[in-house]
Length: 283
Image (cartoon, rainbow, N blue to C red; front, side, top):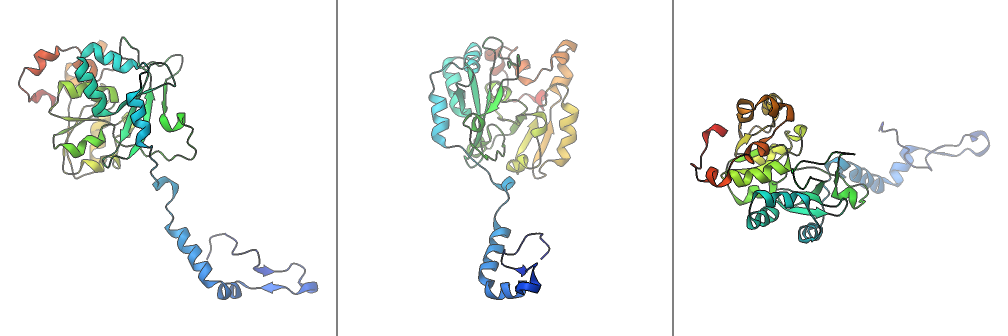
């Protein structure tokens, strides 16, 4: 075999052959060690490469962060939009935890379709505006990094993916976790998921959307990017894309890069929910 690996340290010819005459050929080695060699080769070919391994976090860790009494700026901000019962239900529904890495930091746990806890994205929000704090540095990291778990192989899934098992509602996908949480209150007829970033909408992630109706709600300025992605996504799903923000946005809103959450929080929730449940302008 031309693998470039040494067979065994005992195989070969002595460089001082004229004086010692030692020569143990590969053929002799294989004859004497056939079973051991075959077993080692099977192990090499069947061991999954690191990138195929999916590491997860213990559920007890997730539970501790949800029951934490430390401040959580994002949850405090949600309490300015919704009543306490709604915020409590959102925290439990989406597994929104609290981290002590920065005072007021939030954990958005990524829990997959089979309830594997992939990791949690930790971010810090402004308690009044609900905007991410990016200065003096972007406050963003991961639970497995904060826990200093070595050789952890993170394979991301949709934020909110665990909700797919419990209903057959049409699926709405946005970029940010914050937007998915807020939109789920204004538009409860959808199951809201977040890709986590503009580039994280891809074939591998969308496999869990098989046979589902899916509507993409890109941020302002990302409509063309996400529309171009649709042919490369997992094909066995019915994809649509909303141009709502592109149609309704002002020049200032475009400059600020609004997303669905920015649009929805400007609406009166009670009035909005009392209108007809199906709102065709969103599709």
